[in-house]
Image 1 (cartoon, rainbow, N blue to C red):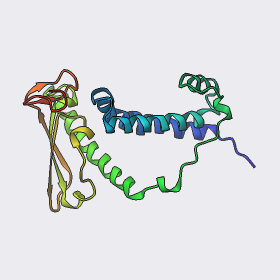
Image 2 (cartoon, rainbow, N blue to C red; image 1 turned 90 degrees about the vertical axis):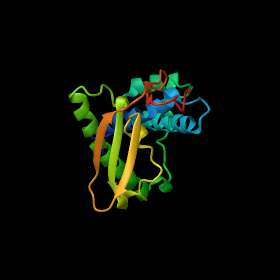
Image 3 (cartoon, rainbow, N blue to C red; image 1 turned 180 degrees about the horizontal axis):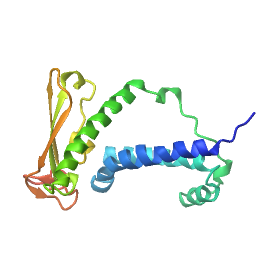
Image 4 (tube, rainbow, N blue to C red; image 1 turned 30 degrees about the vertical axis):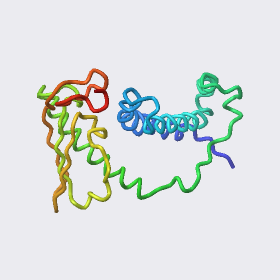
Length: 197
C-alpha cells in the first residue's frame, strides 16, 4: 500500500537544500564557479555535479511543487514534462562511508574555524572571512584522513596554515591577512594573486 507522506519528504529536501547545499556546498564552490577559468577541471566538475543535483531535485520535488518544477524543467531545455520522468536510480557504489567520515571531520573543523573567524568579525578586526588568515592545529591522527584539503577554500579565507600535533584537540586562530585584495577573487595576497596575476 502506498503512503503519500509529502510533508516528511518536503522537510528532508528543504533541510538538504538549506544546510548541505546552500550553507555548505554552494558557499564553498561559488569562488570556483565565479573566479576559475571556464575550462578548469574543478569548475567543469562542479557544473556537472550541479546539473546532477538539479535533475534529481526536480524529480523529487515534482509531486510537491508540480507547477514550479515543470517551469524549471522547461527552462533548462527539456521538451518533456517533469512528471513523465522517473526518479534517478543512483548506483550502490555512490555510497562511500569512508568519504562520508572524511567530510564529517572536515565539517567539524570548519565549524571550529568559523567560530574563530566570527570572534574576529564581532570585534571588527576583520570584515568578511576573506580577510582572515587561519592557523589551524589538528591532531596527528587526522593527517591521513584529511590530506590534500585546501583549508583556505574550505573556510573561505585568504590563507590557512595547518599544523599537526600528537594528542591535541582541534583549535583555530584567526588573524587579519596581510597584503592587497585581488579585484577578481577578493582574496588578500602579499604578492600578485596566483590565480589572477
